[in-house]
Amino acid sequence: MLAALAATVVLAGCTSTAEAPVDEPAPASPEPTPTTTTPLPDPGPTPALGECHALTFRQALVVVGRTAPVPCRKQHTAQTYFVGTLDLTTDAGFTRRVDSQAAQRQMRTACTRRLPRHLGRTPRELRLTMVRAVWFSPSPARAEAGADWFRCDVVAVASPRELLRLPRRTKGWGAPAMCATAAPGTRGFDRVACSRRHSWRAVATVDIPGARLPAAAAIAGRMDPVCRDVAAGSADDPLDFTWSQESPTREQWEAGQRYGICWVPA
Image (tube, rainbow, N blue to C red; front, side, top):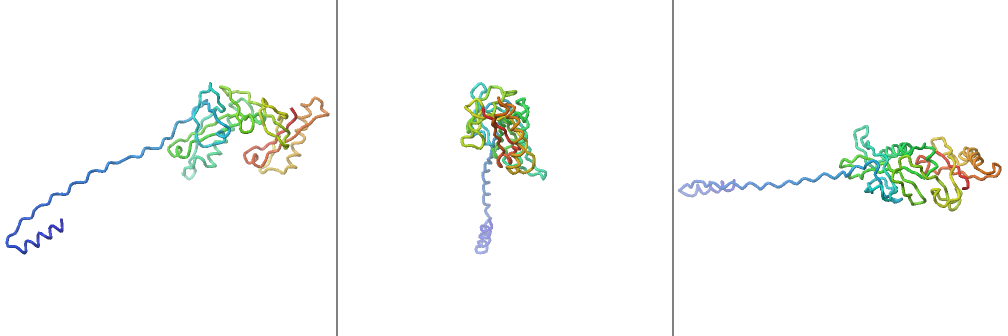
């Protein structure tokens, strides 16, 4: 418009007849750009108490993620006995990741504490079984979308890398006892359910105090009297018996196992 207006003024000075300025049409308004909204991520469904899952041994070790439930009347290897809510907010007001150590610690504590109550057994009794608590949380993407649940499942180990088939209802279930294929510390030693072929069975546990894993000699000195007495009491001849002890490895100790296990031949 400024250029057109300047041209009109110049032309008026060079001619004897002034021409009325001609109005230019106003520029057309641009078409409105359609706005698009990004759909919110799907937080997914929340697990239900009592649902069953057909987990493989490997799937039972995966903490983050959710497997689809199966009808409990069908074959399954895990059952949900508790569903909780994650606390992902720090004291400073920040949000923790769902796979953070703090979130994992919260799930581990809640699930391990509630398993004895679900099965109607004491924590010490469960030490001598093949039953374990496993836990799961939403994926990071679904946690960002608002999912804040965690799920506690009960599983039973049949043998290395294999889970037992569970009954339709696990509340108050008699958990399978712990046995082994060989003496602890020897070649061929594997923990198995006592329903499988075995040659040794676990008969007692011994608490090991301390914040750090003690030396092997200190653990043996604490466990020997207990294991010897238990073995003598379960033997046909109290003067002729065999026993073995298994102290926790460093990995087991750091995972929370603060006890050793006494074994006798089956």
